[in-house]
Length: 518
Image 1 (tube, one colour):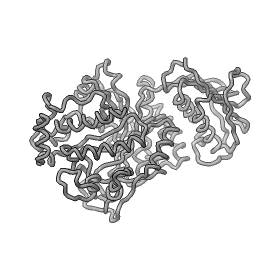
Image 2 (cartoon, helix red, strand yellow):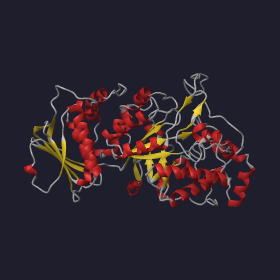
Image 3 (cartoon, helix red, strand yellow):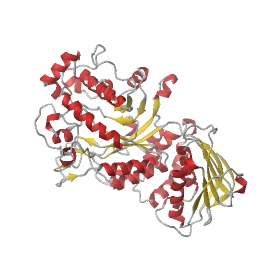
Image 4 (cartoon, helix red, strand yellow):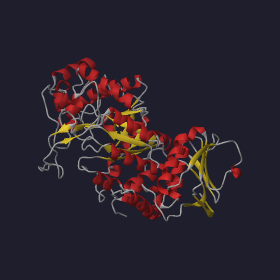
C-alpha cells in the first residue's frame, strides 16, 4: 500500500466502466453507492481506450489476466480523478470493491440516503491478495431457526469482511431445517419441537413454547443466489450418522431401535443414531443428499460425523452382523465404513465430503471407551478414510492434525478453543481470536499447503435471537476475517484495534449488536 496525495470524490455524474465479465460486481457497487448517496449512477461497458480519457469521477473495473496477485487478489488505484480496480477474476474485483468501501466514510455502509457526508476516498495504491482460500463462518440454524432475513444480513457482513464460505448448519438433534420433498415428514415433524431448554447445560428451565421453522427449497435457492453475488460459497451441513434425532423422530424406522421418539427439547449430544447396517438408511440418506446437491452448487458437502454415541450400535444385532460381514472390529470401524460409503456416493456425483475430525476414528470424547471399544483398527475392513475427504479439525492436538495431513487429507482449522463463537469473551477474548493461526505451531512446512484455511463457528444452543447471534459474532468475526486474509507478518494487534473503532461505526450504521470489547 502506498498513500498518495489528494482524494477521490464520488459525484452525481460518476459512471462505472466495467469489463463484461464483471457485470455482477459493477451492479453490486452501483447499488451500494446509489443507496447511500442518492445519486443516479450509470454503468457503461469498458472500451479499449486510455484511462486518462475517462471523465472525472469515473470508477473503472478491468480484467487483467496477467496481474500476479493470485485468484482473489486485486490492484486498486485511487487518485483525484478516478478509481481503478483490476483483477484476473470477478472475486478479485469484488474484494477490491470492499477495500474501496473501507476508504469511504463509514456512512457508505448505511441503509438509506445520507446527507451532509463528503463522499471521498483517500488516494492510494494497493495490491492485495488472500492468505487462505477458505475463510468460513458457521451459522447454526438447527438449534434455533433464524430465517432468511438474518442469513442475508450475515452474508452481507461476511462479504464486507472478505470471507468466502458460509457453513450453513441445517440439521441436528433439535431440528431439521431444510425441505426435502421426497421426505416431507422431515419438516412436518423434524422442524418442530414442543419446548426448548433455556439457561445453560443441565438446566431444568424451559421456554414454555414450541419452536418451529424450516427453509423451503425456494428460500434456499434465494439464499444461495444472494451469497453467490457476494462471492460466498454456501456449504450445507447435514449431520450423520449422529446428531440425527430430529430425522429419526420423523422416520423412526431409520433409527436403531425402530421406536418413535420426539424431537428433543434439551440440548447436548443425544443417543439416537442412524442404523448404518440397514440398506434402507443408505437409500434414505442418498435420496436426501440428491436433493441437497440440487440446491447447493458447492463442490463440498459437509456430513458432520462428530460426537456419535455408540451405545445403540453396540446393542444392535444388525450392527454386529455388519461387523462380522465387513471385518469391522468395533464402532469406530463401523463409522469409518459408513463414512467411506457416503464419501464414495458424493464422489460419484462430483462432490467432496467434509466432516469433523471425529471421522478419523480417534476417541475425542471418551465415547468409545465408555462402551469398551477401541479406536480405528489398521486392519479394519472399512479401509482407510477416503483421501479426498476434507477434515474440519475442531478438537485434538497437533499430532492428530499432522497425522491427518500425512495421510493426504486437507484441513480446515476450526479448533474449538480458538474459534467457537458461542464461547464467552472471557474464554476466547478478541485478542485470542486475532492471534489464532490456522497453521498449527510445529506443523512441518511441507504440509502447510494442506491447511485450506479457517472456520469460526457460531453454535446456537444458547443463541435464540438475532441480537444474541450478533453479540457473540461481532467483533470477533473481524479478527477471524483478518486472520484468514492477511499474511502473519503483516498482522498487528494494536493496529487492528485502532481500525476496529472505525469498523464499530460501520456496524452501528447497520444496526449490528456488537459486543463492546477491546
